[in-house]
Length: 526
Image (cartoon, rainbow, N blue to C red; front, side):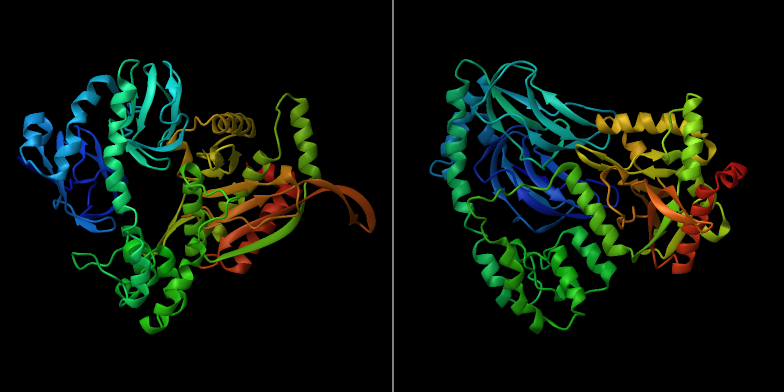
Protein backbone atom coordinates (compact mmCIF):
# COMPACT_ATOMS: atom_id res chain seq x y z
CA UNK A 1 0.00 0.00 0.00
CA UNK A 2 1.52 3.34 -1.08
CA UNK A 3 1.58 6.18 1.44
CA UNK A 4 1.53 9.66 -0.09
CA UNK A 5 3.85 11.95 1.86
CA UNK A 6 2.89 15.61 1.48
CA UNK A 7 5.12 18.59 2.23
CA UNK A 8 4.17 19.50 5.81
CA UNK A 9 3.53 22.96 7.21
CA UNK A 10 7.09 23.96 8.24
CA UNK A 11 6.57 27.50 9.45
CA UNK A 12 3.95 30.13 10.02
CA UNK A 13 3.13 31.87 6.76
CA UNK A 14 5.22 29.46 4.66
CA UNK A 15 3.27 28.37 1.55
CA UNK A 16 6.04 26.73 -0.48
CA UNK A 17 9.66 25.64 -0.38
CA UNK A 18 12.45 24.69 -2.71
CA UNK A 19 13.44 21.04 -2.75
CA UNK A 20 17.17 21.55 -2.45
CA UNK A 21 18.46 17.99 -2.16
CA UNK A 22 17.15 14.44 -2.20
CA UNK A 23 18.63 12.27 0.56
CA UNK A 24 17.00 9.06 -0.74
CA UNK A 25 16.44 7.49 -4.15
CA UNK A 26 13.58 5.52 -5.59
CA UNK A 27 13.85 1.94 -4.31
CA UNK A 28 15.61 2.90 -1.06
CA UNK A 29 14.45 1.30 2.18
CA UNK A 30 13.57 3.89 4.82
CA UNK A 31 12.72 3.69 8.48
CA UNK A 32 10.62 6.09 10.52
CA UNK A 33 12.60 9.35 10.89
CA UNK A 34 14.99 8.54 8.04
CA UNK A 35 15.93 11.90 6.41
CA UNK A 36 14.16 12.11 3.02
CA UNK A 37 15.01 15.49 1.55
CA UNK A 38 16.18 19.00 2.34
CA UNK A 39 13.81 21.92 1.75
CA UNK A 40 14.54 25.66 1.80
CA UNK A 41 11.92 28.32 2.57
CA UNK A 42 12.05 32.04 3.27
CA UNK A 43 12.32 31.28 6.99
CA UNK A 44 14.18 28.02 7.45
CA UNK A 45 16.31 25.32 5.88
CA UNK A 46 15.09 21.95 7.12
CA UNK A 47 15.68 18.25 6.58
CA UNK A 48 12.34 16.44 6.38
CA UNK A 49 12.26 12.94 7.95
CA UNK A 50 10.06 10.03 6.92
CA UNK A 51 6.90 9.53 9.00
CA UNK A 52 6.67 5.86 7.99
CA UNK A 53 8.85 2.81 7.28
CA UNK A 54 8.84 1.27 3.82
CA UNK A 55 10.32 1.59 0.35
CA UNK A 56 10.48 4.84 -1.61
CA UNK A 57 8.34 3.98 -4.63
CA UNK A 58 8.26 7.32 -6.45
CA UNK A 59 9.68 10.83 -6.07
CA UNK A 60 7.42 13.54 -7.51
CA UNK A 61 9.79 16.52 -7.79
CA UNK A 62 13.32 17.20 -8.94
CA UNK A 63 15.99 19.03 -6.98
CA UNK A 64 15.43 22.75 -7.50
CA UNK A 65 11.66 22.49 -7.92
CA UNK A 66 9.33 24.73 -5.91
CA UNK A 67 6.97 22.53 -3.88
CA UNK A 68 3.71 23.93 -2.43
CA UNK A 69 2.85 23.03 1.16
CA UNK A 70 0.46 20.07 0.98
CA UNK A 71 1.75 18.74 -2.34
CA UNK A 72 2.69 15.04 -2.55
CA UNK A 73 6.51 14.94 -2.54
CA UNK A 74 6.98 11.17 -2.69
CA UNK A 75 5.21 7.90 -2.12
CA UNK A 76 6.32 5.18 0.27
CA UNK A 77 5.32 1.55 -0.24
CA UNK A 78 4.62 0.49 3.33
CA UNK A 79 3.98 -3.10 2.32
CA UNK A 80 7.46 -3.37 0.86
CA UNK A 81 9.06 -2.33 4.13
CA UNK A 82 6.77 -4.45 6.31
CA UNK A 83 8.02 -7.87 5.33
CA UNK A 84 10.34 -9.63 2.90
CA UNK A 85 7.62 -11.68 1.10
CA UNK A 86 5.70 -8.54 0.13
CA UNK A 87 8.89 -6.90 -1.04
CA UNK A 88 9.22 -9.76 -3.57
CA UNK A 89 5.59 -9.53 -4.70
CA UNK A 90 6.17 -6.89 -7.38
CA UNK A 91 8.45 -9.53 -8.84
CA UNK A 92 10.61 -8.08 -11.47
CA UNK A 93 10.92 -4.48 -10.30
CA UNK A 94 14.40 -3.17 -9.66
CA UNK A 95 13.43 -1.83 -6.24
CA UNK A 96 12.77 -5.30 -4.84
CA UNK A 97 16.37 -6.49 -5.12
CA UNK A 98 18.07 -4.21 -2.57
CA UNK A 99 15.17 -4.47 -0.13
CA UNK A 100 16.17 -7.85 1.29
CA UNK A 101 19.36 -6.86 3.20
CA UNK A 102 17.59 -4.08 5.15
CA UNK A 103 16.05 -6.19 7.95
CA UNK A 104 19.38 -7.89 8.66
CA UNK A 105 21.13 -4.55 8.96
CA UNK A 106 18.76 -3.05 11.49
CA UNK A 107 19.34 -5.91 13.92
CA UNK A 108 23.06 -5.08 14.41
CA UNK A 109 23.18 -1.34 13.82
CA UNK A 110 22.41 1.34 16.39
CA UNK A 111 20.80 4.49 14.99
CA UNK A 112 22.08 7.54 16.85
CA UNK A 113 19.59 10.42 16.65
CA UNK A 114 20.41 14.06 17.30
CA UNK A 115 19.54 14.54 20.98
CA UNK A 116 17.65 17.42 22.53
CA UNK A 117 20.50 19.89 23.15
CA UNK A 118 18.65 22.87 24.55
CA UNK A 119 15.22 24.14 25.44
CA UNK A 120 13.39 25.24 22.32
CA UNK A 121 16.09 23.91 19.96
CA UNK A 122 14.48 22.00 17.07
CA UNK A 123 17.48 21.67 14.73
CA UNK A 124 21.19 22.31 14.43
CA UNK A 125 23.84 22.67 11.76
CA UNK A 126 26.33 19.83 11.55
CA UNK A 127 29.51 21.89 11.44
CA UNK A 128 32.22 19.23 11.53
CA UNK A 129 32.54 15.44 11.55
CA UNK A 130 35.09 14.15 14.07
CA UNK A 131 34.92 10.51 12.86
CA UNK A 132 34.89 8.73 9.50
CA UNK A 133 32.85 5.80 8.17
CA UNK A 134 34.50 2.57 9.29
CA UNK A 135 36.23 4.14 12.28
CA UNK A 136 36.05 2.35 15.63
CA UNK A 137 34.63 4.34 18.54
CA UNK A 138 34.18 3.76 22.24
CA UNK A 139 31.55 5.22 24.51
CA UNK A 140 31.97 9.03 24.79
CA UNK A 141 34.16 9.31 21.67
CA UNK A 142 33.41 12.74 20.11
CA UNK A 143 31.39 12.12 16.93
CA UNK A 144 30.55 15.54 15.50
CA UNK A 145 30.18 19.23 16.26
CA UNK A 146 26.75 20.83 15.99
CA UNK A 147 25.81 24.53 16.02
CA UNK A 148 22.39 25.77 17.13
CA UNK A 149 20.93 29.18 17.86
CA UNK A 150 21.91 28.77 21.49
CA UNK A 151 25.06 26.70 21.69
CA UNK A 152 27.94 25.06 19.86
CA UNK A 153 28.41 21.52 21.16
CA UNK A 154 30.49 18.42 20.52
CA UNK A 155 28.25 15.33 20.59
CA UNK A 156 29.81 12.11 21.99
CA UNK A 157 28.98 8.52 21.07
CA UNK A 158 26.58 6.78 23.47
CA UNK A 159 27.89 3.33 22.48
CA UNK A 160 31.02 1.51 21.38
CA UNK A 161 31.28 0.02 17.92
CA UNK A 162 32.16 0.94 14.34
CA UNK A 163 30.80 3.97 12.49
CA UNK A 164 28.67 2.32 9.81
CA UNK A 165 27.25 5.34 7.98
CA UNK A 166 27.11 9.10 8.44
CA UNK A 167 23.72 10.34 7.28
CA UNK A 168 24.50 14.05 6.84
CA UNK A 169 27.26 16.12 5.29
CA UNK A 170 29.06 19.00 7.01
CA UNK A 171 26.89 22.10 6.64
CA UNK A 172 23.58 20.20 6.61
CA UNK A 173 20.73 21.24 8.90
CA UNK A 174 19.78 18.31 11.16
CA UNK A 175 16.41 18.18 12.98
CA UNK A 176 16.41 17.06 16.60
CA UNK A 177 15.49 13.37 16.54
CA UNK A 178 16.88 12.67 13.05
CA UNK A 179 19.34 9.79 12.67
CA UNK A 180 22.78 11.38 12.33
CA UNK A 181 24.98 8.30 12.27
CA UNK A 182 24.67 4.53 12.56
CA UNK A 183 27.05 2.51 14.73
CA UNK A 184 27.57 -1.18 14.08
CA UNK A 185 28.28 -3.54 16.97
CA UNK A 186 31.15 -6.00 17.22
CA UNK A 187 29.02 -8.83 15.80
CA UNK A 188 27.90 -8.78 12.19
CA UNK A 189 27.52 -5.02 12.04
CA UNK A 190 30.38 -4.37 9.66
CA UNK A 191 29.31 -6.98 7.15
CA UNK A 192 25.64 -6.07 7.22
CA UNK A 193 26.48 -2.44 6.57
CA UNK A 194 28.37 -3.30 3.39
CA UNK A 195 25.38 -3.95 1.10
CA UNK A 196 23.77 -0.59 1.84
CA UNK A 197 26.31 1.61 0.00
CA UNK A 198 26.55 -0.87 -2.88
CA UNK A 199 22.79 -0.87 -3.28
CA UNK A 200 22.70 2.89 -3.42
CA UNK A 201 25.77 3.23 -5.61
CA UNK A 202 24.13 2.45 -8.96
CA UNK A 203 21.43 5.02 -8.26
CA UNK A 204 23.98 7.68 -7.31
CA UNK A 205 26.16 6.90 -10.29
CA UNK A 206 23.22 7.13 -12.64
CA UNK A 207 22.10 10.40 -11.14
CA UNK A 208 25.46 12.18 -11.01
CA UNK A 209 25.79 12.93 -14.76
CA UNK A 210 22.21 14.24 -14.95
CA UNK A 211 22.96 17.89 -14.15
CA UNK A 212 25.82 18.01 -16.67
CA UNK A 213 23.73 18.78 -19.79
CA UNK A 214 21.77 21.45 -17.96
CA UNK A 215 24.37 24.28 -18.01
CA UNK A 216 24.87 23.73 -21.71
CA UNK A 217 21.16 24.04 -22.34
CA UNK A 218 20.68 27.13 -20.16
CA UNK A 219 22.38 29.70 -22.42
CA UNK A 220 20.34 28.56 -25.41
CA UNK A 221 17.05 28.65 -23.53
CA UNK A 222 14.87 31.67 -23.15
CA UNK A 223 15.41 33.70 -19.97
CA UNK A 224 14.52 32.11 -16.65
CA UNK A 225 14.19 28.39 -17.16
CA UNK A 226 11.11 27.17 -15.33
CA UNK A 227 10.33 24.07 -13.32
CA UNK A 228 7.78 21.45 -14.21
CA UNK A 229 5.12 23.50 -12.45
CA UNK A 230 5.78 26.49 -14.69
CA UNK A 231 7.62 28.53 -12.04
CA UNK A 232 11.07 30.02 -12.27
CA UNK A 233 13.64 27.92 -10.42
CA UNK A 234 14.98 30.09 -7.63
CA UNK A 235 15.22 29.93 -3.85
CA UNK A 236 12.80 32.02 -1.80
CA UNK A 237 15.73 34.18 -0.68
CA UNK A 238 16.67 34.83 -4.31
CA UNK A 239 13.07 35.77 -5.14
CA UNK A 240 13.05 38.19 -2.22
CA UNK A 241 16.32 39.74 -3.40
CA UNK A 242 14.84 40.21 -6.89
CA UNK A 243 11.79 41.95 -5.43
CA UNK A 244 14.00 44.14 -3.26
CA UNK A 245 16.16 45.17 -6.23
CA UNK A 246 13.11 45.77 -8.41
CA UNK A 247 13.91 43.24 -11.15
CA UNK A 248 11.64 40.72 -12.88
CA UNK A 249 13.01 37.30 -12.01
CA UNK A 250 11.23 35.71 -14.97
CA UNK A 251 13.52 37.66 -17.32
CA UNK A 252 16.78 36.53 -15.72
CA UNK A 253 18.72 33.64 -17.31
CA UNK A 254 19.62 31.15 -14.60
CA UNK A 255 23.19 29.87 -14.39
CA UNK A 256 22.73 27.52 -11.43
CA UNK A 257 21.99 23.81 -11.41
CA UNK A 258 19.01 22.91 -13.60
CA UNK A 259 18.81 26.50 -14.80
CA UNK A 260 18.19 27.87 -11.32
CA UNK A 261 18.41 31.65 -10.90
CA UNK A 262 21.05 32.48 -8.29
CA UNK A 263 21.57 35.59 -6.19
CA UNK A 264 24.58 36.42 -8.36
CA UNK A 265 22.33 36.25 -11.44
CA UNK A 266 19.94 38.76 -9.86
CA UNK A 267 22.72 41.15 -8.83
CA UNK A 268 24.39 40.95 -12.26
CA UNK A 269 21.07 41.52 -14.03
CA UNK A 270 20.23 44.51 -11.84
CA UNK A 271 23.71 45.99 -12.42
CA UNK A 272 23.17 45.85 -16.18
CA UNK A 273 19.93 47.75 -15.80
CA UNK A 274 17.75 44.99 -17.28
CA UNK A 275 18.97 45.66 -20.80
CA UNK A 276 17.22 42.58 -22.13
CA UNK A 277 17.65 38.87 -22.37
CA UNK A 278 19.43 39.09 -25.73
CA UNK A 279 22.43 40.70 -24.03
CA UNK A 280 22.23 38.50 -20.93
CA UNK A 281 22.21 35.09 -22.62
CA UNK A 282 25.78 35.15 -24.00
CA UNK A 283 27.12 36.11 -20.54
CA UNK A 284 25.81 33.00 -18.80
CA UNK A 285 28.77 30.78 -19.74
CA UNK A 286 31.19 33.50 -18.55
CA UNK A 287 29.67 33.41 -15.07
CA UNK A 288 30.25 29.66 -14.93
CA UNK A 289 33.96 29.94 -15.70
CA UNK A 290 35.11 30.17 -12.02
CA UNK A 291 33.46 26.78 -11.37
CA UNK A 292 36.30 25.04 -13.25
CA UNK A 293 37.79 22.03 -11.49
CA UNK A 294 40.53 22.93 -8.97
CA UNK A 295 44.10 21.83 -9.51
CA UNK A 296 45.63 18.99 -7.52
CA UNK A 297 47.20 21.41 -5.03
CA UNK A 298 43.92 23.22 -4.30
CA UNK A 299 41.61 22.36 -1.43
CA UNK A 300 37.89 23.11 -1.75
CA UNK A 301 36.08 23.67 1.54
CA UNK A 302 32.42 24.33 2.22
CA UNK A 303 31.56 27.62 3.91
CA UNK A 304 29.57 26.43 6.89
CA UNK A 305 28.67 27.20 10.48
CA UNK A 306 29.42 30.57 11.98
CA UNK A 307 31.57 31.58 9.00
CA UNK A 308 28.59 31.15 6.67
CA UNK A 309 26.40 33.30 8.93
CA UNK A 310 29.08 35.99 9.07
CA UNK A 311 29.39 35.85 5.29
CA UNK A 312 25.66 36.24 4.77
CA UNK A 313 25.41 39.14 7.24
CA UNK A 314 28.39 41.02 5.76
CA UNK A 315 27.13 40.62 2.20
CA UNK A 316 23.64 41.75 3.18
CA UNK A 317 25.06 44.83 4.89
CA UNK A 318 27.18 45.80 1.88
CA UNK A 319 24.23 45.23 -0.45
CA UNK A 320 21.72 47.21 1.60
CA UNK A 321 23.68 50.06 3.19
CA UNK A 322 25.29 53.02 1.47
CA UNK A 323 28.50 53.00 3.51
CA UNK A 324 30.67 56.03 4.06
CA UNK A 325 33.45 56.20 6.65
CA UNK A 326 34.73 59.20 8.59
CA UNK A 327 38.15 59.06 10.29
CA UNK A 328 39.77 61.34 12.87
CA UNK A 329 42.65 61.16 15.32
CA UNK A 330 41.85 61.36 19.03
CA UNK A 331 44.06 62.20 21.98
CA UNK A 332 43.67 59.59 24.73
CA UNK A 333 46.24 61.03 27.12
CA UNK A 334 43.72 62.31 29.70
CA UNK A 335 41.60 59.16 29.54
CA UNK A 336 44.80 57.16 30.05
CA UNK A 337 45.50 59.10 33.24
CA UNK A 338 41.95 58.45 34.47
CA UNK A 339 42.26 54.75 33.61
CA UNK A 340 45.50 54.49 35.61
CA UNK A 341 43.86 56.19 38.60
CA UNK A 342 41.04 53.65 38.55
CA UNK A 343 43.53 50.80 38.28
CA UNK A 344 45.30 52.13 41.36
CA UNK A 345 41.92 51.95 43.11
CA UNK A 346 41.49 48.30 42.11
CA UNK A 347 39.34 48.73 38.98
CA UNK A 348 41.22 46.92 36.21
CA UNK A 349 39.72 48.65 33.23
CA UNK A 350 40.64 49.26 29.59
CA UNK A 351 39.84 52.22 27.37
CA UNK A 352 36.66 50.59 26.05
CA UNK A 353 34.25 51.46 28.90
CA UNK A 354 35.18 55.15 28.52
CA UNK A 355 34.56 55.00 24.77
CA UNK A 356 31.21 53.33 25.45
CA UNK A 357 30.20 56.11 27.84
CA UNK A 358 31.29 58.80 25.37
CA UNK A 359 29.34 57.13 22.55
CA UNK A 360 26.17 56.84 24.64
CA UNK A 361 26.41 60.47 25.75
CA UNK A 362 26.69 61.57 22.11
CA UNK A 363 23.87 59.28 20.95
CA UNK A 364 21.50 60.84 23.49
CA UNK A 365 21.84 64.18 21.71
CA UNK A 366 18.71 64.59 19.51
CA UNK A 367 21.00 65.63 16.64
CA UNK A 368 22.40 62.09 16.53
CA UNK A 369 19.32 60.01 17.35
CA UNK A 370 19.36 58.45 13.85
CA UNK A 371 22.63 56.75 14.77
CA UNK A 372 20.91 54.73 17.50
CA UNK A 373 18.29 53.21 15.26
CA UNK A 374 17.14 50.27 13.16
CA UNK A 375 16.13 50.58 9.53
CA UNK A 376 13.67 48.57 7.43
CA UNK A 377 13.92 49.91 3.91
CA UNK A 378 11.46 47.39 2.51
CA UNK A 379 8.83 48.79 4.86
CA UNK A 380 10.19 52.32 4.43
CA UNK A 381 10.69 52.90 8.17
CA UNK A 382 13.37 53.79 10.69
CA UNK A 383 12.93 52.97 14.38
CA UNK A 384 14.65 55.40 16.72
CA UNK A 385 15.81 53.42 19.75
CA UNK A 386 15.38 54.99 23.16
CA UNK A 387 17.41 52.27 24.85
CA UNK A 388 21.16 51.94 24.39
CA UNK A 389 22.31 48.38 23.77
CA UNK A 390 25.92 48.34 22.60
CA UNK A 391 27.24 45.49 20.47
CA UNK A 392 30.93 44.77 21.09
CA UNK A 393 32.54 42.88 18.21
CA UNK A 394 34.78 40.08 19.47
CA UNK A 395 37.16 37.83 17.52
CA UNK A 396 36.99 34.16 18.53
CA UNK A 397 38.49 30.96 17.17
CA UNK A 398 35.14 30.24 15.51
CA UNK A 399 34.84 33.69 13.91
CA UNK A 400 33.46 37.14 14.62
CA UNK A 401 30.79 37.47 17.32
CA UNK A 402 28.96 40.58 18.51
CA UNK A 403 27.77 40.10 22.10
CA UNK A 404 25.51 42.83 23.43
CA UNK A 405 25.77 44.96 26.57
CA UNK A 406 22.12 45.78 27.25
CA UNK A 407 21.15 49.13 28.82
CA UNK A 408 24.78 50.23 28.81
CA UNK A 409 23.74 53.78 29.66
CA UNK A 410 22.50 52.62 33.06
CA UNK A 411 25.72 50.86 34.06
CA UNK A 412 28.80 52.21 35.78
CA UNK A 413 32.32 51.88 34.41
CA UNK A 414 33.02 49.19 37.02
CA UNK A 415 29.91 47.22 35.95
CA UNK A 416 30.85 47.55 32.28
CA UNK A 417 34.34 46.25 33.02
CA UNK A 418 32.92 43.17 34.78
CA UNK A 419 30.31 42.48 32.09
CA UNK A 420 32.81 42.90 29.24
CA UNK A 421 35.11 40.38 30.92
CA UNK A 422 32.31 37.85 31.38
CA UNK A 423 31.09 38.20 27.79
CA UNK A 424 34.62 37.92 26.43
CA UNK A 425 35.24 34.68 28.28
CA UNK A 426 31.87 33.22 27.25
CA UNK A 427 32.56 34.16 23.61
CA UNK A 428 35.96 32.45 23.64
CA UNK A 429 34.43 29.31 25.16
CA UNK A 430 31.50 29.27 22.74
CA UNK A 431 28.98 29.58 25.58
CA UNK A 432 27.18 32.78 24.58
CA UNK A 433 23.37 32.34 24.49
CA UNK A 434 21.61 33.55 21.36
CA UNK A 435 19.80 36.19 23.42
CA UNK A 436 23.16 37.86 24.05
CA UNK A 437 24.02 38.00 20.34
CA UNK A 438 21.17 40.13 19.04
CA UNK A 439 19.35 43.33 19.88
CA UNK A 440 22.22 45.83 19.71
CA UNK A 441 21.40 49.39 18.66
CA UNK A 442 24.99 50.55 17.97
CA UNK A 443 28.17 48.50 17.51
CA UNK A 444 31.80 49.11 18.48
CA UNK A 445 34.63 47.09 16.94
CA UNK A 446 38.33 47.19 17.79
CA UNK A 447 41.44 46.15 15.87
CA UNK A 448 43.85 47.96 18.15
CA UNK A 449 45.88 44.91 19.19
CA UNK A 450 46.77 44.17 15.58
CA UNK A 451 48.18 47.61 14.79
CA UNK A 452 47.51 49.38 11.51
CA UNK A 453 46.30 52.95 11.11
CA UNK A 454 42.56 52.44 10.66
CA UNK A 455 39.93 50.25 8.96
CA UNK A 456 36.51 50.88 7.42
CA UNK A 457 34.10 48.72 9.45
CA UNK A 458 30.92 47.28 7.94
CA UNK A 459 27.60 48.23 9.55
CA UNK A 460 25.88 45.60 11.66
CA UNK A 461 22.47 45.54 9.92
CA UNK A 462 19.79 46.77 10.76
CA UNK A 463 21.80 49.42 12.62
CA UNK A 464 22.86 52.65 10.91
CA UNK A 465 26.43 53.11 12.17
CA UNK A 466 29.45 51.29 13.58
CA UNK A 467 32.50 52.70 15.40
CA UNK A 468 36.01 51.34 14.84
CA UNK A 469 38.78 51.68 17.43
CA UNK A 470 42.44 51.23 16.55
CA UNK A 471 45.91 51.17 18.04
CA UNK A 472 46.77 53.71 20.76
CA UNK A 473 50.40 54.78 20.56
CA UNK A 474 52.60 57.63 21.67
CA UNK A 475 53.17 60.25 18.95
CA UNK A 476 54.80 63.67 18.83
CA UNK A 477 52.23 66.45 18.39
CA UNK A 478 52.22 70.24 18.62
CA UNK A 479 50.46 71.65 21.69
CA UNK A 480 50.70 75.40 22.36
CA UNK A 481 53.57 75.65 19.83
CA UNK A 482 55.48 72.95 21.70
CA UNK A 483 56.26 69.44 20.49
CA UNK A 484 55.00 67.01 23.13
CA UNK A 485 54.39 63.27 23.34
CA UNK A 486 50.74 62.29 23.56
CA UNK A 487 48.78 59.00 23.43
CA UNK A 488 46.85 59.09 20.16
CA UNK A 489 44.47 56.81 18.26
CA UNK A 490 42.69 56.88 14.91
CA UNK A 491 38.94 56.39 15.23
CA UNK A 492 36.81 55.46 12.21
CA UNK A 493 33.04 55.37 11.99
CA UNK A 494 30.98 53.98 9.12
CA UNK A 495 27.48 55.35 8.53
CA UNK A 496 24.58 54.47 6.28
CA UNK A 497 24.58 57.53 4.02
CA UNK A 498 20.91 57.04 3.19
CA UNK A 499 19.98 58.00 6.73
CA UNK A 500 23.07 59.83 8.03
CA UNK A 501 24.30 62.91 6.19
CA UNK A 502 28.05 63.45 6.03
CA UNK A 503 28.10 66.50 8.29
CA UNK A 504 25.99 64.68 10.92
CA UNK A 505 28.39 61.73 10.96
CA UNK A 506 31.39 64.04 11.25
CA UNK A 507 29.74 66.04 14.03
CA UNK A 508 29.04 62.83 15.95
CA UNK A 509 32.72 61.82 15.90
CA UNK A 510 33.74 65.33 16.93
CA UNK A 511 31.37 65.11 19.89
CA UNK A 512 32.82 61.73 20.95
CA UNK A 513 36.31 63.11 20.47
CA UNK A 514 35.63 66.14 22.71
CA UNK A 515 34.27 63.92 25.49
CA UNK A 516 37.30 61.61 25.41
CA UNK A 517 39.88 64.37 25.19
CA UNK A 518 38.25 66.17 28.12
CA UNK A 519 37.03 63.46 30.51
CA UNK A 520 35.68 66.11 32.87
CA UNK A 521 32.97 66.81 30.28
CA UNK A 522 32.22 63.10 30.15
CA UNK A 523 31.98 62.86 33.93
CA UNK A 524 29.56 65.76 33.95
CA UNK A 525 27.22 63.85 31.63
CA UNK A 526 27.22 60.60 33.64
